[in-house]
Image 1 (cartoon, rainbow, N blue to C red):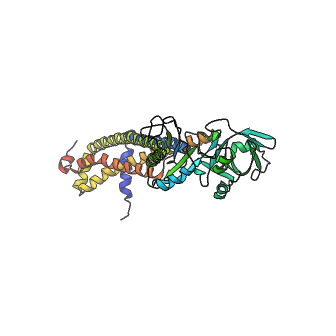
Image 2 (cartoon, rainbow, N blue to C red):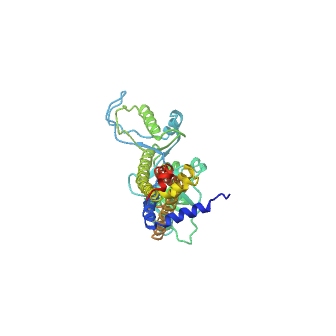
Image 3 (cartoon, one colour):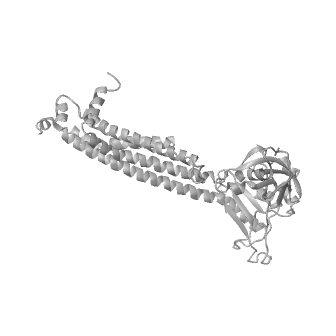
Length: 421
């Protein structure tokens, strides 16, 4: 006895081959359902990749900055005050707000007000935004160092005049033959040494981001007359803490520290990146659910078609089934025979649909790359887990499609069936 009953499978293929058009039309419903599933999910994945590639690499950051003047008197303080964020607030937040895992103050030149400072290297010049930063914040700024290094703790402590420049800055200030690392640039008359270059990891606004120069925040404050204040705080929650909790608790702490009325909205501005990240995740979750809903509906319609065809097959083969039972075939063997035919149709049609869908996605992906890429659509494809789920859906659909006709076949009375005309 062999593990695979070749005679039985040959018989099944012969039976299906006798009705090629009917079998092909029946299988097309299943083919189309899996094809739609793979294309819809692959396209959704490509859109998700494009959006997520352009999203900051630390998606739970929180920014807090000084906003409008106070409008409500509180604890003896008059209205019309503008609350200034100060360097000592950083340690106060770290020591008093338990939900905060990381906090640093940031300053800039030319980003929020005024014009970008004038930057010179030898006979080349340009105007570029200058951003203060700290050790370990490269990913928080969504950038990747391409040569040299990023800022470190010694740069911070010693207020070194060092700079990490974007690729667009490098293109404008240096030629291909110039040695960039170690070169000096002058920002508003102040000399800085280039220690690294970077490219932006943000897809949507990479050009603007690569026109920035990052220097130690302490250096920026002293060099550009911002000693007594900070432009904003960047905060990261502790592991397991939602960014909304950090946003609320830090603002409550600063309100109490600066004697701001709790109802005086707008005195401190804030932005919660995780909130936007969750919205985008929710959107793509909805797209994925819709794709599965449409595809499974189509697959089930195809499976119903398979079930109807199997009912016709059972009707046509009533005498054959009666003869089998008269010769000793058990009801279980009859059920298995019908189920195998249905599963074969759905499995082959589904596999071809999956292959066709993946081929279309590969062609689209190659076309996107050949055209120079699209920031909003990157690397469409169907992952392995999705393919496995699709196969499971196929098998289940095939079995369900065959249950009714298989049960009917198993109940055939051999005597009555042999008399059937």
